[in-house]
Amino acid sequence: MAIAENIKTILSEIPSNVTLVAISKTKPLEAITEAYNSGHRIFGENKVQELTTKYEQLPKDIEWHLVGHLQTNKVKYIAPFVSLIHSVDSLSLLKEIDKQGKKNNRIIRCLLQVYIASEETKFGLSEDELNELAYSEAFRSLTNVSVCGLMGMATFTDNTNQIRKEFKSLYLIFQRLKATWYANNPEFKEISMGMSSDYRIAIEEGSTMVRIGSDIFGERNYKL
Ligand SMILES: *Cc1c(COP(=O)(O)O)cnc(C)c1O
Image 1: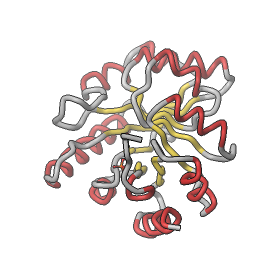
Image 2: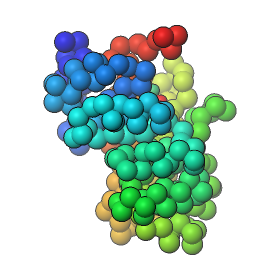
Image 3: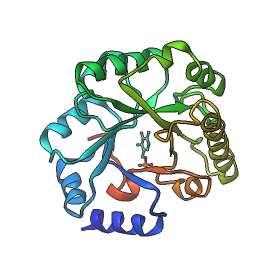
């Protein structure tokens, strides 16, 4: 009951143009089924193995997102079904996604992950790397990936000013790309930012997609 209630509460709080991705990593099938039965269809995982296992076992009208770091050699496992990859951080990864998209005869939707935090541990492209990638010839020749926007994670901190500043920076980077390279591409429209602890700030700063795990499913227990 709690899971369905939590989703309902969050959906009532966020604007209707913001997509809620329920992050179900480490959670059992029953928890996802409870969310599913309440009507929710968009779920995200951060590990390829867990994502494919859950995809196989759950209803096929679920929209599965990958939000965690993706290794090139694992793209093939998710390419047939993944709905959105939030965590693309290199041209070589994008090329592999393109290749697997061709093999599966589909266009795979992706977000480019931008490094906005002040921590060393977060994956993602710097703005310079992002520009280099976005304007490269190799990037333009990809046919089976669709870059739908950007994703970023703020620093894990209680300092809301800092979090807000980082989200603002992602929004500005998005606006710059939107105004230039993606000016004629209506598909480039998503800003994936905001998790349980900071999604309210993220929405105020222009998020179109929030990735919420523990506020829906409860705390994760990694010792299981
Ligand atoms: C786990 C995870 C989330 C959700 O985190 P919560 O704090 O549980 O909401 C969001 N984004 C990514 C990339 C994650 O790995």
